[in-house]
Image (cartoon, rainbow, N blue to C red; front, top):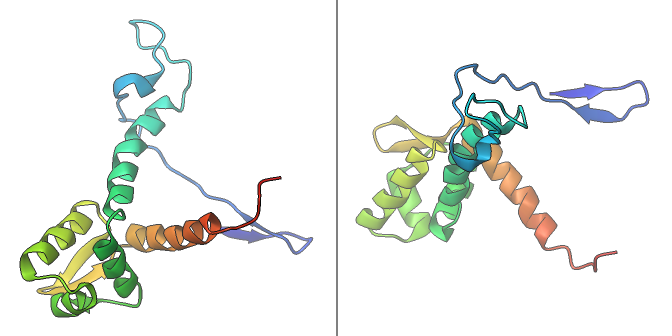
Length: 141
């Protein structure tokens, strides 16, 4: 959510609701005793977020998937349109479409027509911003 202040500067605020049923996982839990006490109260949130975030970011790690996501950013696209953009045969294209679907970035709108999910759209836009930031040729101060 973007809020305008009296000075005209926009502030970005985000409210995140965390389900109370999150269970800590692995070493990211920050456990200090066998009773389940934690050093960091946010450790459970980080542990739960990491699996989904890694899956979504991993789905962006292939050039064919990036092309498909860029195409879907303009609106829903057919399987045939994705095939033209990526120049992949049916088998490999199905694999990449399935990886994007499993990561929660795209959904079938109807048979052979795919669209970005809200999370997929947000991730693609963030990836564009990050890509521009990594091309900054200036030296570090």
